[in-house]
Image (cartoon, rainbow, N blue to C red):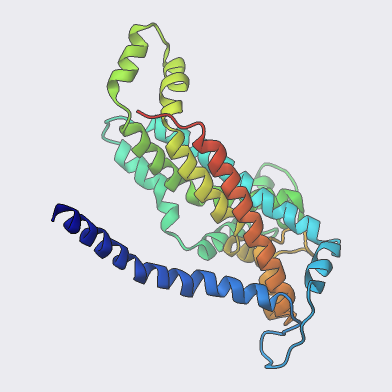
Length: 294
């Protein structure tokens, strides 16, 4: 009788998975399969007529001399943002992991940019860096320095966009690290202090290893989000000048809506999906091996 109740409970739980599985198939798996199919055609995104091209779009993509630059920019946006957000977020979390009257205000101030739409954030910083009338150039002029067109500097502009993206989302990383720090038992740190460990030694040898689960969550989510960066790029440079600040996301948009080349855009989208999946899985596996149990 008991075994029958357990079986019935498992059946009910399994049945409750069905709506989630249906939604996953409908909104994730089906669009992915459809996108791969479109990537093998010359569809313009609007017409009912198209022709099957096989792997021609993929050959065209890898033969494009600008493709390597776009991939490099995307990796800078993704990996650069992930590193900056995690390093700065961890520093903020360590500094604000205490009880003080101003701590709550500081946490709120750091988290506040997360609540701003990325496109709006991009335009805010655009008006700061624009060559004429920008706040940064006005400050340089006050110091007797000539104006600098920060938005046409190629790799420098890419790093500026990476900084802005990191600045906006560092608050999320900070909150996750704060949650991780507050789950570490105080006994561990007390034992380290009794053994004569200094504050830096206590952090690097006690707290940091126990924060690996938080690091895993932060790094993987930041990497995925930043590799898909779109809004801030559009607001700051729209991918220009030329292809100097393009990411895979902005390039796909321009191919689909600007050049009406949906097949080529889908091929680039498929490549981006595979690249993000591979990088994310590798990062996840590497960090998971370093996790320790409390």
